[in-house]
Length: 505
Image (cartoon, rainbow, N blue to C red):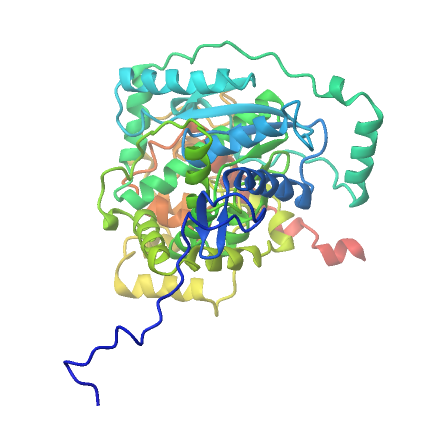
């Protein structure tokens, strides 16, 4: 048996830990300067080649970006997005071994108003980022988040996408690009010297009221991500960009995967974490940094002086349990410290996920009003979603929503004052009053229960945590109203519609 006074120090074998005194595993000559994993030690030069090759291999393997296309880089100022910007700048330089063949642009969404930053703090952040952007000679756009309040309804509608290209189209496009004068095709765009637009104080207050209407920090973060993505896609469309490049790294993808599962976004995992995201059809979201860990990016930025700007967010200086997003991030990063393969294991799981074909080809009316993914609520009765709804009803969590299944007539005298009809502000009658449905003015702001019918399960939870849907941007409410009217119209004429089988006969 073991004794207390026994000494085993001489018998134990010490693990051979990597150190910077070892030689580089690639060139076998230079002294190692960075340790990525247990047996992956690189010198300075080999680490740079490894980092650059991984970025270009990710773009070349997927073949999403065609030569000559305009690509918008979403730069938040953080290490990952700034490293992505540095890689694009490196790939377009004259001494690049294999030059990139697209036309880049930069966009930065100023979210200072949503987190309560002062005007001076926002101006300081914008000035620092402007200095970084001007050094790249790329055209850049600085857009305050307040502009999301004035977006058109087309943002939450699928635009006609270009016809799907065959697999051989990419090689043909590259050959055509090389045959022509590639230097003339990739003429750098003139850098826009536009100053950031002035933000009205009233718009900032409305934005803060919108974010503050969410009761939990989890719902606020989810709502902020949705609004940011809407504004990014709108900027890409208006400026003529067909691809939107995001800076999500491997660690962020792992955290997002577990967070999405916790928030009920299991059906949308492939779109939220995959390399390419086709939910907006005409603007494709790509994530070329998803192969890099946060550790690799931090080492590269430090060794090669890649500038970045620290910008606080909603989770800054909060406890780990303040939100599901922050708790998941803390859990993954702490687990990664003791088990270095944690992030890579979760990441490899996300690579196996695929989008259902019906999800990518669904009509815009069958997609979520907020996240634009296919609705996951049209399921059979014997499903987990239906079981969850029944459990909520029985537990009394939604007792106020149960009577909505059989709504009682509303006294017209007790409703709000008459407002303009809903037909695009022309003052014309939409016909609802003549059909006995009452005035459509009450549909200007849809009820929470009506709005939830247009959302996926995860977005329903976000709206459920909001005290009211009134602060939502007008483009969301207008599109919700339009979808509800079309749904009601379809119910009225359903007896006269032919199903697909009858049309085939």
